[in-house]
Image 1 (tube, rainbow, N blue to C red):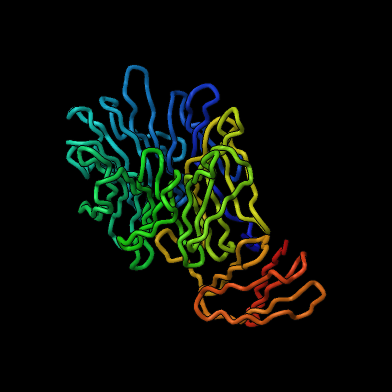
Image 2: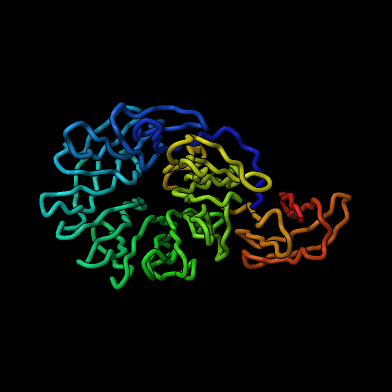
Length: 408
């Protein structure tokens, strides 16, 4: 995928875990280690930045205790549970002065996990504890709190969405399923997840307003783990089995791509797309095996392809957040003056995504006009098969915005 990246003032935060000596929570800023979050075994699952403060959610295990649900504000821990039963924070969202954290807290009821929401440290339960459940993602919009996760029905895990505590069931309970991420944009609710078809095989799923779109055929293992909007279209990340290993994978507009040509086991856990002021640059956090250990990685879109940063050689990158001062947390991402193309490099069919009608012109490096393309409905596909290998320019005749395209 091709993006023209010009801005460098944004700060990119990644939370994850290093397992070199023991499982230890880490926070990286712009590719460098910012904090080691404690000296006891811990896990960092989520990061969110607001008003100059960095919020990292996860858990800490003290000697003789179960894991405590923990929120670090910068590097200072706040313990949401006391270690009586295991608990963890899976995701964090800050809206105004309120901090929302979600996860699970096991109870004395057969040690079942309860899907849990903490608002400013005050615990609210989403399930009754009769069966195992967990909350995996939280998003706040217009004062409404959306939580994605799952609850067991006594036999299978059922994917669910809770809006202000009221549940919406996404799957029928005949197969194991989980809702892993939720995003609200305007009046649309996007949820990612997966559903098991046979033991070891999953559909990767994107729900829009409760309607499921199956991203894979369910014949192999696949997971959809996070979603963000790329030029108004959902970009879903996760992993899919390629016949040998599960490899880091993303889906855009129904098409499937990989960020790496290394055929080793790995997944993408988190995606964040910067504002148009930063050219909608895409950041993805996850891991990829080197054959010996898992390597925590941050992938970022470049021109063309992907740039890879190794954050830890023994662990994983779990969550990424871009501190973009031009974009309010709950402000819509202004998409009125941007277009994107993929895949890049391209062999045959080039996809053009745009948020408004445009007229584009395709040039070679000699300045010759090869084609004029009208994009009237946000999406256009053009055939590049007959063009020679090399570099081409696609230019918006009104704005002058230009994308470089490599033809293989």
